[in-house]
Image (cartoon, rainbow, N blue to C red; front, side, top):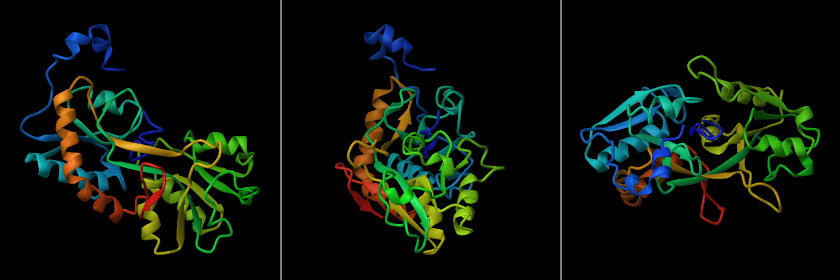
Length: 278
């Protein structure tokens, strides 16, 4: 998720066709990166990831990257969703996407700078507040909120839980629609019993709820799918110098990134898939 929640990741041409046809040539292609500014591709209204005011956690991380590179920070704004990468990064209007799920071939990935997972969000005191897997029989017959076309939907279908579910739109223009706010309002009104949400998307609003909502990471158990994702910086293909430079920033400033993620209540997992924060 933002991340493009899943992640920008449920989200989202390829620029590597030339490389595939001639790998020797691909190794010599110069990085098409601005040398005078850190040009970030961002959504202007996609909290808690980013917004024009710079209030999102990806904004804060972009500021840290710019500080380390000693470059001024510039944004090219475009709504996330289909066409985001084509209209921004691939059009050379910017050079960096701050949050992208590892594995998507449309971008070249740096090493990940965090790993997170989907979570179950419940009202305080809920009888399903301790559920850590969608296979838990406690969820049977419960009204569960879920975003359309996200990875947990398949398991909810397999477990026969979609009949009582409420589905919220995933890809919207966040300037005009607020599906997460609608979902959490339904939770507080007890229209739904629980919500399955990408953790980095949920964490900030759970924190703002002041204890009225509880967030429980959904962890892989048995033969269930793994609902955790490693999040990277996304860049254009065939820019090896830029990739190595950014990975150097990640190594040096990982502690600063972690502080930002903790501030926004992003659930973090270690390399073994165990919860380490918040």
